[in-house]
Amino acid sequence: MLIPSWQLEDAQKLADEFPYTFYKPSDQVMAQLEVGDLVKLIFEFTSDNPDDPTAERMWVEIAEIKDDSFMGYLNNEPAFIEDLKHQDSVEFRRCHIVDIYGIEDPVPSLTDKYIKRCFVTHNILYDGQEVGFLYREPAESEDDSGWRITTGYESDEYLDDSKNASYVSLGAVLRQDDSIVELLENEVGAAYIKDKQGNFVEYDE
Figure (cartoon, rainbow, N blue to C red):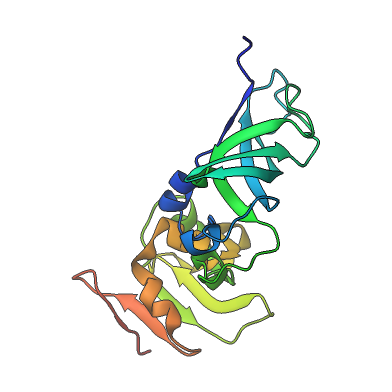
């Protein structure tokens, strides 16, 4: 028997590791699943072509449900996976489901809550340094949260160079340092700095 080139990604593991940036349907919405519903799974695969992606996200139509186990039929034609075809049978569990078609999730997701963007320095986003100073100004666009986030130790020269900052979702920052999560509820004009004890206090210029 040939070993498949693909396997299903454990989406629950990803959601537990990256709760602010990876959406996983709640248990409440998955309890509503019925035969005929469409769910999306992540099919990881190996390829000899280095230009190929490492996974494909595809819809599967549920044909059978038994407790935590499902059987369904692939509703897409894979673009890269050669040993998987449209209408092939797929066995999976709840932990593999990353999206559900046409059923609204009653539980608000953290990914949606922190989808708005902010400016953050690369010291935090890529170099593993902690947030030390943040403030909220009026949003520049509909997708802008208004938050500006730094370590508090960047030089003026560093901050003046646009290559040292990125405009990303708040979730992407929380993925690196979620010590600021409660502060993000505050309104425009809020500003906080980390004191010597490692606590955030209001910053008053």
